[in-house]
Length: 87
Image 1 (cartoon, rainbow, N blue to C red):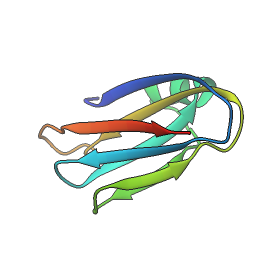
Image 2: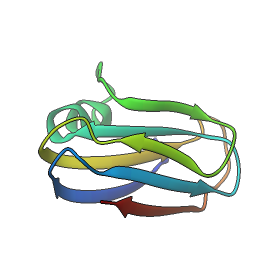
Image 3: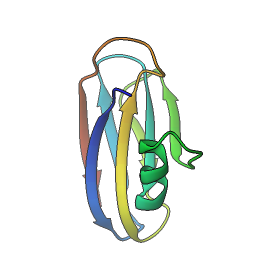
Image 4: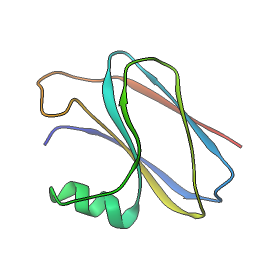
């Protein structure tokens, strides 16, 4: 599976993540447990989804260690993404 990954570290739950993409892609904000399931191809829960407009914002729902994954849903290609944490 090809994807980009940003380890956001521990966040308090009051932040917003702003993502800028060069093309449409799936954007998934996940805690560590769900990110590990994503890595192994298992069922996982996430915040976000298919993003067709940039910038895209998603709120961090609670305190924890967070990861952002970007993928093209199995299609070939590359993605360039910028990520900013807004307090």
